[in-house]
Length: 249
Image (cartoon, rainbow, N blue to C red; front, side, top):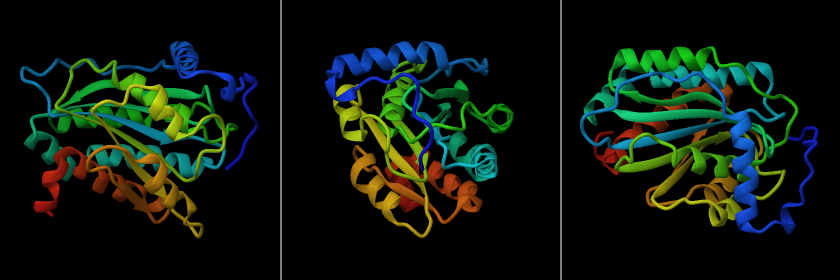
């Protein structure tokens, strides 16, 4: 859960909320680099814009990172998920890896998914996304701030806006989720969590009490990294269908 701290040592306690936003925005301009899928915008308003935030902190080893990345790709291209995407008329998706305060790396730029081919295109980009960092701690507040900034850059303002943040531990670097929610624009954004569980139930409780936010927000639990793909599939189905999914299960 710990790693070498960033060489950029800024005392977050002495920064005001606007200063925190400015710091993260400046760093985003450096680290947010990745290929984009060039897809035409939908003719009609979309139902969902989804930001996926994947844990790449020091507690995640190479095998676990690969299980997350391939699990996300498998879930996005799963036939049931594709059917859900088609049922709602398509969704916008972006994904990034996060770890330390200034370590957020875009994996998949904003992409419009409407059918099996576009979902598979996105999955292939994810499968080949390089890992950004391996030595940084869990700066969850900074990750949430980055997710809010990325959401505001979506090409279309969709009916629902959801941040899907995954991790295996609690914040241990920089400001936490509560500060992020005060500093950044989370208006009309729901934050859901996917927790990779283990013997220690602390991360699950933390996500339920400190991380999720907004109407209908929920935590999906993966029993281990081996269960990540199935947990992500369950989570995506709930997020794509929204509150109506309960009646479809």
